[in-house]
Figure: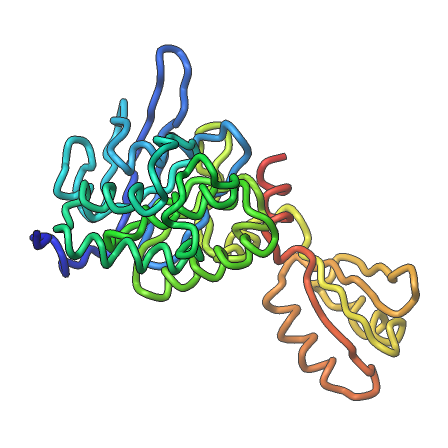
Length: 316
């Protein structure tokens, strides 16, 4: 059956405006605001932060107690036509163990509105993308945890949704499986889908995107590119580590800059860490300086330009 909404573009795929959700006296979300466009966005936060509640609202499983939540410009609550354009890989597992992996994906794809022939084709293609073709005829009861996770991922995108919600998608996967799923998520983002990846593991988010919505205790602490988020933290100096042949000469050249707070030498004596409150200006000055071959620069990196640093700064 043709989807009447297919091809209709909405600038903000997901929009939360002053959204709160409470269960009795327990507040799961507290006046949450954010918008998300196409591409991959990481929904990051510790366990119990409110990530799953956001997922539940976006996929029509929960209704906001307050505020407006929209996906593709519409409310998801009881909006069955819209829900056909959404894919979900939930954190929880709920299978009929005597079902095969193929049957599991096929019937959920049929429930999403695809006719039989299209559902069969989509099921085979999605199972192939997650590496489950060889075992798709086996009962799910015989699958390892990682295999069950891959089948769960396959059903989330088999019907060709515009927006994908992946709740802790790496659960149960071995290192090889994680690498394959990282690659799959990046590919789905490049295909023009909106992909929301929820995780409490910083490494997982950092492997697929630099765009984050950071949640803690039901509130949004930060939203945007991780570099932009890090730049907002003015109370904490930005650290840049340079390894070179002349670290003391480099430190002397930089220490008097008005943007530099202090410098520290690495324990092995082959590098220096500079702390600055104006990272952009510092990089402009440092790049010109480090072009001088006399410093024999080997590398320059910032330990603060990662999600671990952002998370620790904002959640502490």
